[in-house]
Image (spheres, rainbow, N blue to C red):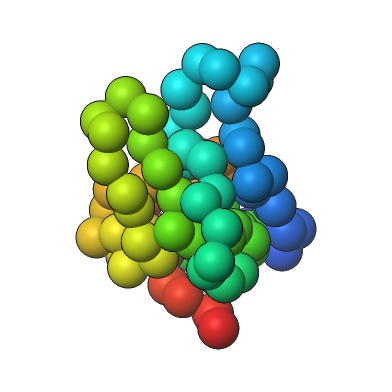
Length: 85
């Protein structure tokens, strides 16, 4: 039997554990909008604001980068997303 877990994971504006270390999702840069994605692997919704800044790569990420399998789901570590809104 398969159980679906339709919980929502909200990625904070700065997902760094201590505010200075880099993190997978980077920091929200402002002047963007909130996006919602659905992980087809673990059946969770991910709510996140873009654009985001990656300190390690010195790069700006946009919402379409999630669909290009750049980011991993914090619930199951897969990259199997569809955009909801």
